[in-house]
Length: 440
Image (tube, rainbow, N blue to C red):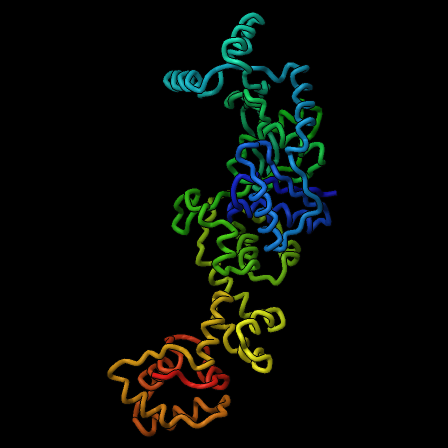
């Protein structure tokens, strides 16, 4: 069975960059009828917070991305220790005591010599009495995994055949001096014991994947199918990493972005398929093809979300927004007609309130000084209610005949006087549901 996972750290809020991995792994599982695991990588007790874990769940529910089970790494520390003991016993995990300053000096020296700045494995040459002395002087050291210096190869689901020379990579630290298990080891243990079959994550993890493949082999396991998606940039190709904090999913939700707009964009962004609005996450999963994604940096423009949100609202039936419309105070007998008229002219649901003000005849009119006499004359010619779909055309026709105005000079001053807006619904449709006109 296909088993995928999304493994965020509850140390902050999810943003659009995180969502790419979550969505791709979710779509793979749902398309194959498999299992999608939400795994909270919370081994850092100082930075992990329950409020962030709750926010992660809330964001995924808002998007309609369900999960089949939840795992927490903080409840699996014994499994990581067992794996560490196995690696120690096989000679693949060793203790090292260099300080950050010492490591930095070593890297600079290697660079000056034209060598790759990788850890020199000095700790492996220490005698037992030297280790004891360092332990007494500096306390516990970090635990590094000893890589086999050979090429690590795999077929990447997006990038194709990949090969990394392990000699060009430092032996990764798996356990900090304070005993905290790091992501590289915890993820290996979880992915193997939870029988994860497919892992999609960002291309910044490629080197990490290579080391994890060796760790899995050292523990006697094969590895999942790995795929690495491209990283997001801004619309001009600029780095997006510094802006991701402002692109948190919770902030997009607060700004009124529709969840299916977010999903429809992120499900196709960076692929050869055009972005198409879908009505449900399951439709995205059906059409998902990992092979259609490329390695090139992917441009993300927040404006696309606004446009797609407007598109979502345009195809949203009244039944889906009925309660929100009624909550504005719109009478039930008028509610569906109101939604039908305004939905093509809003980008966020919150904008319905502005149009309800217009429909009540309470908008702030905008009348230029040079149009004031014309507007007064035109309003005096407005037929008494009730108004219908033909009132606007009949009224403006009469005004045109009386004043000689036509085109934009006729219609725009009247639109501004009635709605306060230069753009909006068809005035014939809008006038038909208006309760009155604003006082000037």
